Image (tube, rainbow, N blue to C red; front, side, top):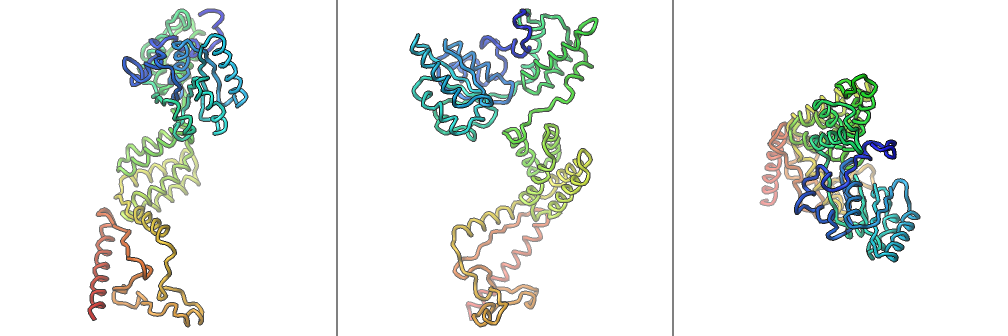
Length: 440
């Protein structure tokens, strides 16, 4: 490596200088692939690069600018504001006036800009003063203005495969200009372990390699050993963003595994979330929801078991209490499933909102005072406990001007089999009683 670049991190020095050096993203790069046209500046257009950290978003933006012989202004939404955008616009105008060249404004972490900040550069994108390329780890549909989205094509980048990162690490080990120049040896097994620890993030992989090389250089025969790899990779968290897309994708996968009766997958996603730093109490709250939404009356024990697991975690904390949450997850995933109450409640809420303020029938009204009784409140009410079988056959508890509903439809699973049989018998008794009443 040259002296002028000695202070730069390995990940920055090894940034690809041409599309041929870019690894990964086969769905976007290569002949007739979506990003190929942009990298060839044919045509040059605004774009949003959405993907996890270390997948090449900044690199691709720089390569686009180089291919289009365009100026390149890089800003970070974390450090920049509207003032910086205005300065970029002025520079772009100057370049266009001097030699007609276009300017790419690259805005890293564009999702950190609020609506007003995004609106600040929209007119200049619209009139062609700027070619906008934004990079984000968050779903652009949720984080960016519709007006901005409509003027930029979204490209979705994926986490790099372990083999892709291994290729980058091998390149960095031997590169005579920008890399480690073969000064440190590393066996394929150790290189793969570093690539695995990178967890799809090229920048992280190169940083780990640089750390490992630094430790190895102190030895008589510089070599990255298994012990060194274990030391630098210790505590390396997997991808998890505590509130962003990865967070919600993983809790979604956990919920669906429970719903799909797969205890093993449920345990895997639970472990992944904890490994990434998720608060176990968040998972506990979601588990209580799962118990009602997906198991319901098919096995009512699930609700109590999840609450008990939550309380156990409260008392024991981590890591002891996490086992109780895992136990509850396995129980729920293995239990009979029913979303009948979830569906019934949703339908009832819809009717309550849409059918207006229907009056409570007088027979069902409370009559705590003489005046209320004199007004007929409670008159004609049939006390169910005094009826045969504890059931007032033929009675209706809906408003008189509303057709009866059967929101709750038990499924043929677990306890709901018995519940369904009982409700079917009661509904049949209602029909017979009403038929007799109308025939008199």
